Every structure is written in C-alpha cells, then in structure tokens.
Length: 115
Length: 471
Image (cartoon, rainbow over all chains, first blue to last red; front, side):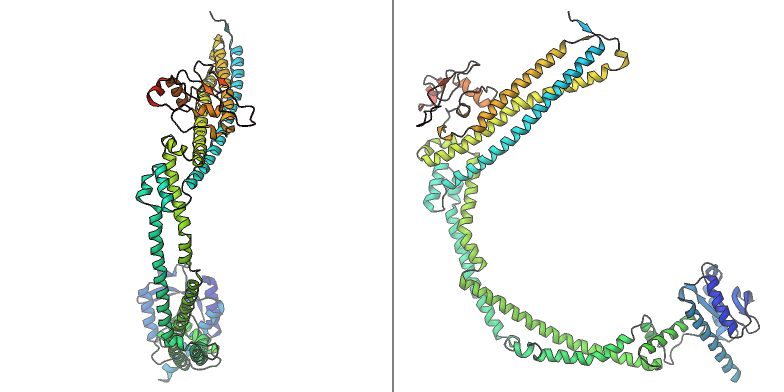
C-alpha cells in the first residue's frame, strides 16, 4: 500500500509526462463539488485524487460527492482519476492505471472533437 | 511443695524434652509405616490363600463338584444360579450362533458370486486391461487439455471478469473507476498465461467451453470410479467371507475360540463368586464340615489364619502405636505453644515448676515400652506359618497359637473376650511333630492374671453349656 505522498508523486509524474500542468492541492469548487484535489490541471480540467485515511479524504469525499463527480465525468465536463489506497498494490500498478486512464481521456476527447 | 526454677532453666528443660519426644515420635512413625507394609503383605497372602481355597473347593464345573461346593460352603446362590447349568446354556447359545454365522457366510458368498460386477471382476477392473480402467484413463486423457486451459486461466479476478462480462460489448464499468483498470490488468495477465494476445472475448469463450467440458468429463469419470469402487468393495467382502469360512472350517473363528474359552471363564467367574462368599463367611461356621476333608481344611485354616494375622496386626498397631502417637503429638503441640509463650519478655521473671517434664518423660517411656511390645507382637504375628495346628471352631484362640502364647494382648477385643469367658484357660503348645524338638507340652501362664488359652479347660462354663469337643 502506498502512502498519500508516494501515491500522489507517482500520479503527478504520470500526468505531467502526458503534458498536463498539475497543481498540487487545487481547491476545486463548482456547484456541490467542493474539495481539495490532490493534483489538477484547471485549464485541461484533468486531475487525480489519491484517497487515503492518512489525509482525511474519506470524510471529505462523501459517497454523494463522488457520485456528483462521476456524473460530471460522464458528461465529459472534467476527468478526475479517483484512486483508493486500498485498491493499489505497487507504484508500477498505479503508474500503469494512470497511463491507461490518460489514454482513455485522450481517446474520449478525440471522439468528442470528431463528433 | 514444688521447687520453682527460673525461665531459662525451664526453657532449656522444655527444649530438651521436646527433642526427646520428637525422636520418639519419629520412631513411632517408622513403626507405623513398617506395620502398614506388613499388613499389606498379609492381605496379599490372604487373597492368594482365598483364591487357592476357592480353586480347591471348585476344581471344575461338573455338577457334582458344584453341588459339593454348595453343600460345604452353604453358598446357596450358586445352587440357584448353577454355573454348570449356565455354562451349558451359554455354550449351546454360542454354538447356535456359530452355526447361524456359517449359514450367513454361505448365503453372502452365493449372493456376491451371482453379481455381474463380481463375476466380471477381471474384465472390468484388471489393472491396465480392465474396461473400467481403460475408460477412466481415456476420459482423463480427453479431460487433460481442458483442465490445462482452466489452470492457465486461474486468476483471483477471473470469476469477476466473467461476472461483469469483461471483453463483451455489455461490459459497463466506466473508465474513470479504478476497477476498470484492475479488470484490464487482470485480463492482460490471463491472456498472457494462455500464451497469446487473444482478445479477452476469445479467452472467455475458450474458458467457458473448457469449464463445461471438464464438468462433463468429471461427471463421467466420477460415475465410473464409483462403479469401480463398488466392485472393489464386493471383492473385498468376498475375500473377508471366504477367510471367515476358512476360519470356521479350521476351528479358528473368534466365536469358536470364545466357545473354547468359555468353561475356563465360567469357572473363573464362579470361583470369584465363591471367594466373595468365603470372604464374608466366618469359616468357623463350616469348620465341622471342613474337618471331613483334611486337604480343604488345611487351605481353609491357612486363609483363616492369615485373616487373623492381618486383624491382630492392625489392632496391635492401632492400640500400641496409633493411640500413643496421637497422645504424644498433643503433648508436643502443647509443649511448643508453652515454649513460644514463655519466651516472651513479660515472662522473664516468672518461676516454673519442672514436675510436668517428669510426667512427659514418663509418658514417653510408656510409648517406648508399647513400641517394644508392638515389635514383639508383630514379629510373632508375621513369622507364624503353622496353620495346620489351628482349629476352625469357636473355642480356639488363634492369637495364642500365632504368638505361641508368649505375647499378652488384652488390648485385642477377641483375646480379652475369650479370656473373660474362659477364666481358667491355659495355652498348651501343639503336639510336636516328629523331629521338632522345640515343640512340647509346655504351658504358658499369662502374667497379667489371665491364663493364655489354646485349649479350653473342660470346666469352663462356656463349654459346659455350648461345646464338648476340646481335643
């Protein structure tokens, strides 16, 4: 299991490698969605949240808020990769998931642009 | 008037007395232990003597022997539940069981031998060539590649991938959820295990076909194996029945062995019952009858004498050791508490009378005397073996015979009662055997006033009224 800082570092590195300008601890506030995102590119509206008990994320991110975030992602309004610390075993695995997510985002945007 | 002494002299005297008493107490304890050991040895000898007496009374279970034993011992229970008759009944019952068992074996063998699975045992189950063996082997060979596919797809997430229909258009997990990537990773790993880059839809199809095939083969193989096992069981039963039949023919069947041991077992049980009866019986009651059979009488005297020895030794120890020891322990306890008490400063100026120590020493001396008497009595009791000189009648004092009339024992109830009832009694040593120069017609007079008794004087009032045989 990776700590908050280890997980965030891996994700930031992957997102930056894909060309995103990631800001740490970005205060996201749109409608009912109000929380500090671990890493977020406000211009591309792409980021990540590594959910850990250590950082108090479980109380900040309620099930309702996660549902609201997912609804926004489903509409293509923003893309945030939500990763629970308990779902990832190693840095390599997390990196692979991040890279696949970013390729899915790129493909999604491409399809949107074409349509 | 007593001459009083100061505290230090009192305490010194008290401790010295305490030391002596402790020493005597130790000797008494040792004597107690020694007596227990001797009593235990006598009990053991008496049990052996009882067993030998019962064996002599009941050498076998012939009806005449049983009748004679009943007549002699008065053991009516044995007449009512006659072991000879019971043995006959039990033997007949067991013989019938053996015959019945023989019939059952024959029937079972016939039934098994008529079964096709036994008749065709070689055809079906011969190693390598049996049809069942070959069919199972073939099915296992067919099953093998499918089982291998299942083995390659073995992954903790495989069942989930099937459940969420991963690889199919119906897969609906959105890409922003982490499980989407976990599914993806698992699917990649499973495809790699299968040795190619097949789309997971193909992997899934291959897996499900293999799973169905393995299930079908497993059902078929299981059915054949059950049939095989049933056949083996029938063969095993046949072997067991055949072996049992042979044992019956050879007379080595467990039931036949039980039948052979039955007379011995019944005799043993009957003797044990007779022993219990004899143990509760006062042999004096059947003394007249035993006199007619000298061999049996001698065994009975030995058992009776050993019982007497045990009883006398127990009473001697209780009277001459246990009682004095308890009194001495009380004295010791009192002395210790006095020592503790008078060592306190407030008694520093007290004056003491030392006369009580003389009484304690006197008590200790009496203890030592009693210990000596006990040792003397014990030596006489334990060394006695001349049972043939005893008599099984009410007017014979075994104590005098056992101790050769040389030990006073009015502390033993039986001795005291006997002497009270026969005040003019004198002990006379048994007639000497040829070559035994130590025996003789010597009379011993009890020095505490009562004559030691073995043969009752004819003028004894008890005998005048109850008994006439004083030989």
